[in-house]
Image (cartoon, rainbow, N blue to C red; front, top):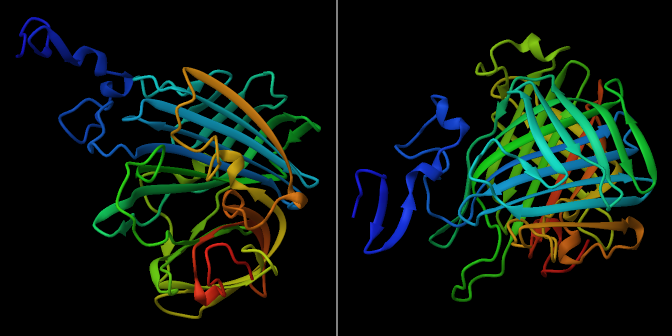
Length: 392
């Protein structure tokens, strides 16, 4: 029944929902897409998520950090991570807890991500804690927001992935402390990418289903900084190498965040398509050399060669992590930390397949720097992978 005095929806003496508990600060803005408060996702899929992700790296490609924070509304979980790499060692901090209904509250114990100015500046803070990792970092955008094409992938009749994502390229300032010492992060040397995505993707424990095909993923993501512009390319292939997603673009780099004006105005140029050609390190599924071609609607194809300088294991931000994976319940508040000696990791272990590499880029006339993210699971004959765990 509905009690007109309280707004409660109940049955007998039980109370199913109290609508007053669903409001949060964002409900005061004209942002609603349904008749529900913002706290209610439009889908009941338990895999719904909302994530902020960053990377940062030096312009010489010798140091890197990654940041992730996500809310899983139907699981009632918020989790985040911060991870650094230099000199062959990667340190990772993990935090997980109960998600607040207030969507503007992005704190998990000592860790938080703050929106300083939407689409222009964000701050990542990890206060001193027992793990030995801490930071106070500010990201300032140098591109207008770039919306990637909506990515929808299916497993049989089930929509496995359905996400919207936008990216911004920029610079970092601040400080980092990890078990190997302190790092000064200077805007003249530290570049990076902000990645905001939301929708549905596999997170947390999955519902049991009948046995199906062996899982397959082939994914490349290549955001690159050049002197006065950026390039970006995204690839999903099926098991035979046929394109599921092909997207490539360029966009201008601005000296200051205010220079690009209204962030709602797109300033990117979309290519007709893109191609990739990856040469793998023997015994691994990671690139030793990659060639990406950006094919415009008119004019000449741009050929970009990528050479890795540093490797980052994405499990340091929870991706495919055996115990700290995304959307896992660890209690009201749980912190953890790990350190990896990169040279000693098994490159074909399932939790080590998902990586980013800092790469130098050249198109024959210019040089740039960025990252190449790679994930290849299952057989992929075009790459020479014929079993789930074989390497090049």
